[in-house]
Amino acid sequence: MFRFEDVSKIYRGRSREVRALDGVSLEIDPGQFVVVRGPSGSGKTTLLLMMGGMLRPTSGRVLVDGIDVYTMSDRDRARFRAERIGFVFQMFHLVPYLNVTDNVLLPAAAGKDRSARARAGGLLDRLSLSQREHHKPSELSAGERQRVAIARAVVTGPKLLLADEPTGNLDPDNAAEVIGHLAAFQRDGGTVIVVTHGTIADPHADRILQIRDGQL
Amino acid sequence: MTTVPLILKEIGHRKLNFLLGLFGVVGAVTLFVFFFTASEASRKETARLMRDIGLNLRIIPKQTDMNRFWSMGFSDQTMPEDYVRRLASNRGLNYRHMLATLQKRVVWRDREVILTGILPEVSPPDAPKPSMSFTIKPGTAYVGYELAQGLGLKRGDAVEIFGKRFTIERCLSESGSEDDIRIYGHLHDVQGMVKLPGQINEIKALNCVCLTPGQDSLSILREQLERVLPEAKVIQMQAIAKAREKQRQTVERYLAFIMPFVLVVCVVWVGVLAMMNVRERRQEIGILRAIGHGSAKIAGLFLGRAVVLGAFGAAVGFAVGTGVALWFGPEIFRITAKAIKPMYVLLGWSLLGAPAFSALACFIPTTVAVTQDPAVTLSQE
Image (tube, rainbow over all chains, first blue to last red; front, side):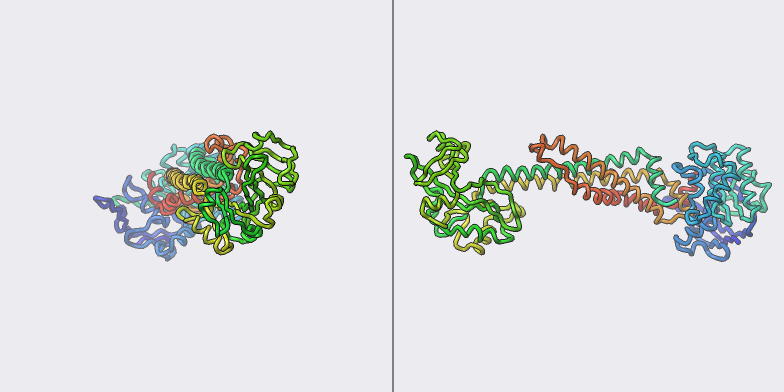
């Protein structure tokens, strides 16, 4: 169970304040595929990073299974992310000097898990990347890079997958394939939250949340 | 993936940044190794050259009349030969290269000569030194330049001096001093000829250059002698002593001046490059945070990289510095090439020091990396 309780986020600049989230409250049940849609600057990435335990709210609480994520120490929150959450970003954020397999095995939890390598192999197979496992990110197409990012996000078996504009840099075919992989993660029992300004994920969505000016 | 392979793969990927950093560390280590290697050789050679100028301390019987001493060139009083052994048996003194001497002006073959008997040199047990004076065997003599020229003496000649036969072992080169009219013999031979058995009238010596600038070496020497040989007094040949001390201290001051500058430049250079590395890797740091890696891992990546840079730079810098010292040292330090030898202890110090300095230089960039907010970088698409 994911729960936001009256969460606000204010970015304070030198001359002005930006209210990125404004009193957001919501609940997301396990196993749902949720699309958060809104225009650029509406606060959707802020919402996603806050769900992922990476951005402390200015006020309000973010609870996962009843635990306030931001009362945890930094170390515990890092472990929480490592064990429970997978991230997929628009820019892929693969480490440029590691090959596909090493990128997939990069999560902290994967380093301690002896079966992770075998699981990574299975994932690469499933994501049609087994021929690319020794390639560097610079040698991959955009679609392949995003599939590697998905493999990295799910290799540790997280319960929640957070995707920030995962199809933003992809052509329609690759975008559809990536959304299909996210939907497959949900079918396997995971929760997916996709932040996007498009509609490509809508057919898979259990819920669609609209965000505008920091409000749902 | 563990930290070390990540560091090595990143280095392989961003070769230019690493090579530029390496350039800085190699430069600093090279200078460090070059200066220490060449200046150590210079220090040794300077010590040898200064030492060759002559023994700068003259220990004479306390009752010596100094007017007579300066007019004659040596003391007309004597003291027991055993004094030299008594002085040399003490630890912690600043006296080195002690040479027991007995001198007497005599007329030989219608010429005034200075008959000089010497014993082999001795040094204290805590500072054994190779002899800088010649050692004369009993029955042999060394003859000063003027005397040898004037009397037509040459090596191997047998001469009789006051009824005792000597073989000339060596005719000395011109010294431009009273040494040119000396006949050197073994102390015991000369004692017999002048009928002063067991007596000497001077111990020549050299003080160690082991005092810090500002310390009055002569008063320390006098205090030490008073403690060990109250029956004697010491005179220091000031010009020789001061030239020697100044030369030694100049090289050391030069090093002490230049090395901090080199280190600061190196630290700043490596630090700036590390900061560039952190900036270039902001998104990587962000994603590492997002997938669960903590501050220790992030810090380890950057500090580990700095240590690898330092260690590699130390090894290369030692090789380059030693090579430069061997190649250019003789020209810059005006020393003989054979005086310069690789100082492997510097490799050890470099391998310890360079990674430490490199890590120190990367401290601020590492702190920036560790405290960087991943939400900021990951939301900057």
